[in-house]
Amino acid sequence: MPRTLAVIAARGGSKGLPRKNVRELAGLPLVEHSLRLAALCPEIDRTVVSTDSDEIAETARAAGGDVPFRRPAVLARDETPMLPVLQHALAEVERDGESYDLLLLLDPTSPGRLPEDVTRAHDLLAVEAEADGVVSVSEPPFNPIWHAVVDRGGYMEPLFSEGRRYGRRQDLPRVFRINAALYLFRTAFLRAERETWLNGRHLLLEIPELRAFHIDSERDLRACERALADGDVTLPWLPA
Image (tube, rainbow, N blue to C red; front, side, top):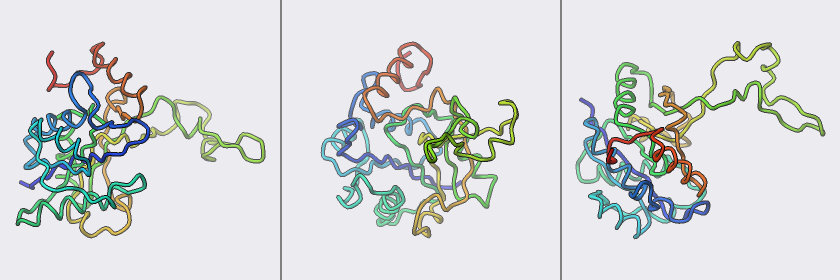
């Protein structure tokens, strides 16, 4: 069986929602939701938290999290891409002789993922040897092929010219958005890539849009709280 390292990437310094990775959702800090999810996934061999923040590190440790290194400030800027953050985490963990075949990225601000999503991601990658990874997606409530427009010279123009070919909504191909719920990469791909993870060959793991939370604002946090309180979404690590 391949060995999987889960990385919970949780930097400090958020601008849109200050301290967002330790803000509470249903009584738990967001970073703890990711830790509890990982604990329910038999596919994961080890889970570590990558952070530059003392507060996040302390919160994670209080919840039983493993914070074996500190992320350098140069990898915790607003403009820092995710690829070097994952490469750094992998190198730090493997420095002591451990070795992993897969790396699962868990974003604390996307708490709607479930253990079965992690299982499905592993299953997809297991049967597709040519794939470099699996990325979670969901179908948005509108199709951008038809509805996305731009202003060109003061007039509305479709963003995608191919939209003119379709006369009915039902004829449009399905379009998905990357929802950040989870990313599963082969570590060989991460070690070799030098530009962006988008250069890889990735499979799509569809997650219902209802669970595809991504919390970047107070409004996002309130919407997620409502979905949980109303029973629209249930998370197995929370009391029924």
